Image 1 (cartoon, rainbow, N blue to C red):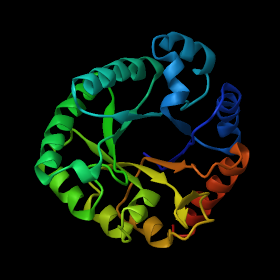
Image 2: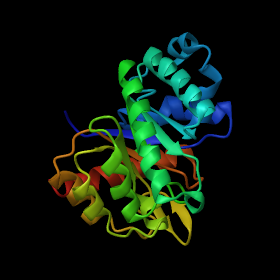
Image 3: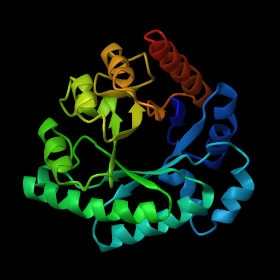
Length: 253
């Protein structure tokens, strides 16, 4: 298995979505990690998604979903598993929509057990479940990662590392986290950050050198996605992010 480059960014219209869907391959990406608004119109018609876009390699490599692990949220995830299986998705990237300020340590342990069971269900559909940590979500602080993964059943839930959410959450040694959790990391969202805002890769203040070193030192092989949420133009983001990732990783090899 090799490093594979993906791109992810929100779109505000069908026109923007179609531009993203048509341009990512031209720039050299292996796939897209889709925001909910980009696949939601097709949830009840996966065959239509395949008909319109299935010819594009990696078009739905990952589906990003937010929500809770209550009865409604679990039902929605199960529907997403069925959709993902039909369009060839590899991974569901789950953003846990509960505020960290309302979460106790015991809650984190309970969430780990619940998501372990949901992750095992995802595997029945040929999918993997990956937790995307977030600012102001249950797994936010450095110790939250330890609490959560201490209770996760081995092999049931992966970890999506988001470089900018780490910094916003007060975690500045991303390389340490990467090395500590190399065995469960199955996805990267690479995003820059400065002055409280998301930035196109290379335009912010994050030092990606140690991050690139840690990714390669741990022998990671899998998806690395530019998670472009700066609000910039689509082709500009596609091009700049790909150049930044390739130059940064290849300069270390």
